[in-house]
Length: 467
Image (cartoon, rainbow, N blue to C red; front, top):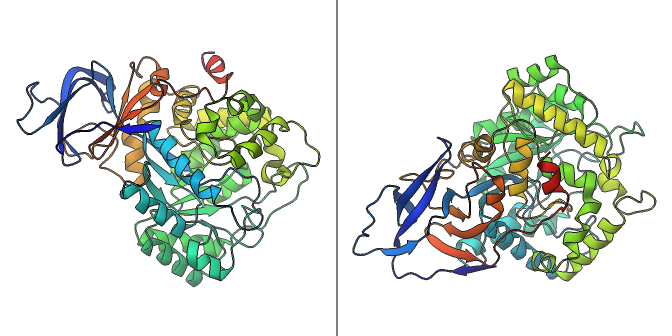
């Protein structure tokens, strides 16, 4: 997957690079970038290296800031339901997810659900070099209520939670909510996630779901903001979006599926100031998951998944359009194989963009039907709602870095952390270049990828994207 490029010192001159200036939307030809101590020192260095520096000639390849996926589930075992104690293979799957993510040029992710103590251990393994992986920002779980979204996930027994952390928190008072927020922050949470949907995933049955109370939601927001944490809220339905703009939330995750939003509703969100992470990749993948069967049957898929995960995914994918009696009906319901609701979501996302609502790139990788490395396709999808190539790239680099609270990332510039990616081609002209990852750098450590190009996860997507 990734192989270290060995050097003798911590100082390196990357010579003959075409450096991507994401803020300016241009390539800087024939630039020489000096790295020292894990930081970018100079992007216009002399071609003659300092006496104590190693030299690596990029031969005209594109040197880019590493990409940022603002919504993932990096530790996912890719199961639609969890019964009993997870097998040891699930820990191997976590390591695979991390390395495949980094090998796609993604240097930082925001995990939006995994239990915080498991994530802390994984972060330590990455920091120690035991596992190749991106920097991991995290929510450390999700705030909801009993029976609320995600309804298929419940708190684990206290003894288990003490070891791994809770996936779901169900505070009943503002004081309890504030204590949980403080607890998560103390363990390293960088964002707070809330699940909020008052309709079941089936939608058509008209069944409502319980939701976190207004009082507790307001308390979560206040407690998070006191500690400098943003609050990002999962939502899917129009009535929920219109209710959520009454609260001090910072971002909405996913999009509205049930109907086209009206102009005044779009403006209500814009005036509120909340951002949106539309996760077009997971939305598209739920509508067309059966079209990923070719990838799941390929040899490349064996690099992405442990055998147990791959066997389960092949079954889910091959039965995706059969709606009777499958165990994952409760996990996907109305949205499964429903292309119409995702067409609605695309239209709503376009209207949000045109209105000036800030959008960021996130795939929801790990949520069964989306995989590490699909961020390149998410960036391409963002152009389908009106963004230019440069705007879509910024949604996954410098603007994403600001959004997640990592201003040291997102640009190839002096003083920035040397979390970089090297692509073949010019992504400002052709976004398929983001699929041709040659090298990845983390804090000055250069690694070579084992494949010339990322797999084609959905064989019809590249054709559709051109239309």
